[in-house]
Image (cartoon, rainbow, N blue to C red; front, side, top):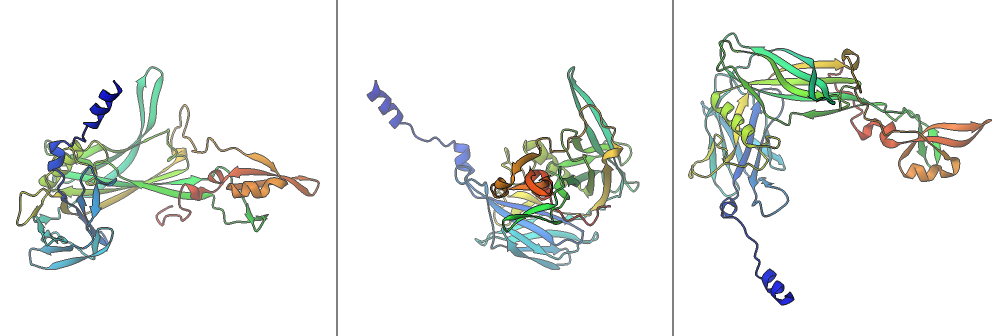
Length: 379
């Protein structure tokens, strides 16, 4: 029996499905979305890697030639700044059309279809509403919906895309004014109490008014914040960016949203072929992933203070539920300082310090969770 099992396992070979073998070619991926703001414009190039190979699905292309050309044959050259990122100063205009031209490290030429920057209407309003959805008899999902409204009386375009960046203030559970320096606890004022952190859109958010009598979008949910998170505990802000897109671009983002069950990113593994607007000039049948487009940006910001929200049931967590104070003797100061504890207050007998109240660094230094530099837009 042992001999038979040994022969059986010795005959097992790794099986690689034919579909994977076919897709083992390294295809160009382009993140070519340009915005008309004052930022340095960025185009990112990478190449897909065999799924049976390395940890990453992509390798970055660092020696390509990247150019944007308008309909008057004016050219803007993008220079490599590292890690497959190409940048340039570029100020697109509504009256022009543009296409992206790429020559990769092997001399292959790629070109996008011509695109034109659509006129984006202003955002009418950003506001929030309480969410109070009953999931079951014993469970209640609470939080807020961030909603947006916009319209275009000129009926210039029916297709929209949104992105957001959210920022919230964090305050340490315990404010400490002592630090361990050169073998002793000393008074200090450099440990910050308030910090800020931010995240940006992970999902694709799109909408259209094609089937409506008016080019108007109202009560569109673009973000949901559950009360299980601590984003609303002190103060919260969200900036929404709105873009008008043409019908073909809308279809691309809609297809990407439907085909990608993770984050909707161009750099996630795609379960099906997704056609963008970039082609190999000499071999149009070669799959090229990604999209080139130019967006006019309209922005609006919303602030929410904690006292604006009618907190119910559990309320909004601070994020510091596990933070507690502890007490150590003066003989253990160095040991706990090396473990990263901070010193909250001394315990004295008469005038002599005999012990210290301590707290973990994560509970007393907000820099473990955010940036101590207040954002310029914070009010």
